[in-house]
Amino acid sequence: MKKYLVLENGMTFAGEAFGADADADILAEIVFSTAMVGYAETLTDPRYTGQAVCQTFPLIGNYGVNPADCESGTVTPAAYIVRELCDAPSNFRCEETLGEFLRKHGIPGICGIDTRLLTKTLRDNGTMNGVITADPSSVNLEEVRAYRITGAVERVSAKDIRLETPANACCTVALLDLGVTNSVLAELNRLGCRVYVLPHTTTAAEIKALSPDGLFVSGGPGNPADCAGVTETLKALLPDKIPTMAVGLGHQLLAMANGMNVTKLPCGHRGSNHPVRETASGHLFITAQNHGYAVTDICPDIAEETFVNVNDGSNEGLCYKHTPAFSVQFIPDTHEISACTEYLYKNFAEMMKQ
Image (cartoon, rainbow, N blue to C red; front, side, top):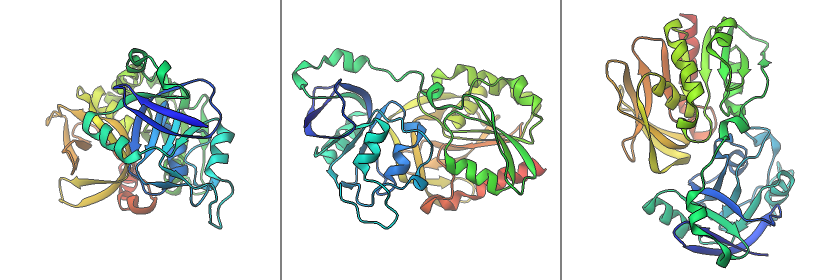
């Protein structure tokens, strides 16, 4: 079935529908990921909530989908955009095709469009809204431009408190869930952390009542300005000096709780091949990232910048001076090339011991 992607500037891309059937138009923020592999991880990453994800790598679906690769139990992108769809995968781990996976989770896709041109357009002009439709002549561009993602964190955060206890548990971590991924929980458990996964609405008093050895603030989707309640919670916890690690959206909110600002990047950083430099050592790391905002106006009396993005110089990490806390914008997990930043979890564990 013929489908069209219409950007808010009127640019139109023709393609074919795949995945879930979508009778209504799909309105979304259009973003691109530069990851060459890991489309199952991308589709199950809560940080893509409300966005239509374009893969810059041209061939997608060639190794199928295995549930063991998924980063969460939900699939929350608004749509999926690829150049060439492989619907006959060849891999011994494959349990279903990409098209079957999207149909099962109700996610529409569009294939056959010029993703190289789409990516260049977003890179040169900044992130845009767009609509996937069967009738491009019916699109109201004013409505497309007015679209905003709302309630993203509320959609993906835990609804109730749950406890993840490993066999080697030696400390307790309160994890404020803004859209946590399986790999983050697995790494904390591997280090012996008993983890209370908390809804994003959890108050400072409720967190302190758990008497945690440490606080972890996860990554998540959406605009950090929409998470004023979480920012206030973090601000209220600052005097207690709980050892804290924050990543992604959590990094931004912790900075805002300490009086810093966050601004929207032109087209964001999304993918598994983003270079960052550690300021103290000069070492370069290739990292996985998924965000559209960056911390600015860093106060040197409050925090020291620990990582910067090599491509655009934006902030990628902070270490706080008057409270035992640090945060990074990228995803410090043990997957593939980003395993080199695993030591950050160990630093968090050591901070809790001290």
